[in-house]
Structure formats: C-alpha cells, structure tokens
Length: 238
Ligand SMILES: [Zn+2]
Image (cartoon, rainbow, N blue to C red):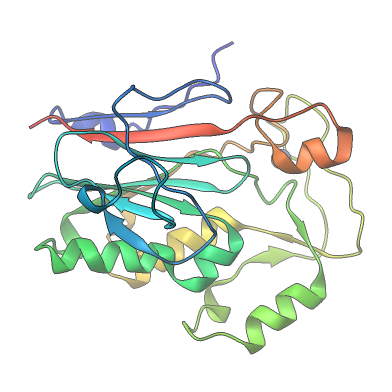
C-alpha cells in the first residue's frame, strides 16, 4: 500500500509538480523550506536561503525551485494561482492556523497579483477529527483571544466519532476534551478569503489512524513507536 497522496485538483495543471510525501521520504534535493515555528509568518523563497535559515511557516515560490513544508499531524497546505502560475506551501498547526498563517499566505499571493477566485488549495494528510482531541480550556482560550475572528469557523464534536477508513486504532480520549476538525477550519478560512469551494480539496486522510506507521507525532506520544516528518512540496515548472 502506498501512502503518497496526490491532489487531483493540483494534478490538473501541467505547469506544476507537487507531492505530499509519506513520512521519512526526502523532497527533491533543491527544495527550499523554513525553520518552522507555528508562526503566521509567510516569506518569499528567494529570501529563505540557505534552507532552514529563516523562521517562518509559509513559503511563496520565487522561482522554479520547489518549496516545501514538513509536518507530523499539522496541516500541509499547497496553494497555487492558476492564472499567474504562483505556488506556495504552508505549515498549519492549530497555533499557526489560529494565528493567521493560511490567510496571510492567501493575502500575500493576492498582493503579488493573484485573485482569490484563481487560487486552488490542497490540504494534505493531517490528524483528523477522528483522532484530534483538544482540551476544552484550549478551545475556550481560542474563542476568547481571537484576533482573527475565527471562533465562528471552528468545528468540533463533544463525542469521538468512528472513522470507517481507519487502518489502525483511533486515538482514545485522555482529557475529557473535544474532537477538533482542523482541516475544516482551514477550508473555512480559505472560503472566507474568497477561494471558491470547488477549488479547495481536503485529503480526508488522518495521519494518526490512516497513514503510514511513522506519520503521527501524537500517535508517537501515545505509543512511543517513533515518528518522522512528512514533506509536502510544490514547484512551478514554467
Ligand atoms: Zn484518525
């Protein structure tokens, strides 16, 4: 079984390459990526060399070199402008998403000349609502201290749900918390920024219960089997 996921949305475009790699696989050798800090900072790749010299969580490709993010439960988000042939990669954990990293990437693409209606966004494998338990105190804090007005977009359920596509046991509740849907929050942020719904794709793959053994940081904290980063990269060919 292969754990690589390809976005059918991004695969339509022959001027770009992309991959959401499984845990432990390396991106192309010339790939640029940042020192990720769960921040809302997005930078052009021309200012992000050498690799990992810049602390930021989003990269907009300045040229034909691939840009990437690495994740292990957080959202890997790849964005493109189909008209202007721009591409970007965003690392979106809960903190970065609440801090505005995805909206920042969309707005920076638009400052470079994109229109939201020309953007296509693929949100790759991450921990899903089937396995992502968050404490209620954390939710309450996020609702109270909410500079980007994201509270109305947040989605969670009080009860754990069964994932029929799980290939291994789902996360067990440990804190009497809620089951949070981070991919859906990211999708709703993109919608609010004006990206059409048909141009946003969610993988539907949970790194905890559906992906390869080493994909999930949280599963490792529960089961101590180790984890490795998953690289997701994108490149403008022409
Ligand atoms: Zn799951």
